[in-house]
Length: 192
Image 1 (cartoon, rainbow, N blue to C red):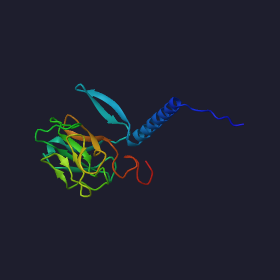
Image 2 (image 1 turned 60 degrees about the horizontal axis):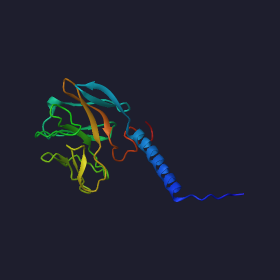
Image 3 (image 1 turned 45 degrees about the vertical axis):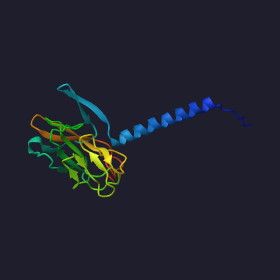
Image 4 (image 1 turned 90 degrees about the horizontal axis):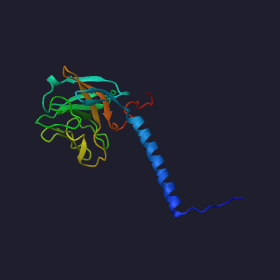
């Protein structure tokens, strides 16, 4: 014998709300696991230094060798994941910037919209990367890679940088998912 039970409007709304919350929380955990887990490192000059346990630390350049507006390209965290390091200069400070002027930043060199290469479209005067050759997305490098114009719906993935006392710049993690990769640290053939 099958018994039917009526659900009133209030109970239905509660059930839908709880279900949506559960899905959102579980989905967020999956995305966080794919992009990288953040852990808090040592305190340095009253600043909390962030490090990513799953990402390798890779030396990129030295502050003394950087010239304002001249990009340095490097692969991180894996081969084929091209990024651009640049000293914005011009008295600009950048969110998550490193160095004495907090003006050294690094971002993925692939557009967040459809993955077009952005190697040749850095505009030093405005501290933007773009317009993308496909759909004109342009990203503000001083403001965490947010979209200035175009079709992208995500900011440009940013490389987490650290600088030691000798001026050596090291990549220690990524904010955001690099276009075209199921996860920043998983190879396209499915391995780790």
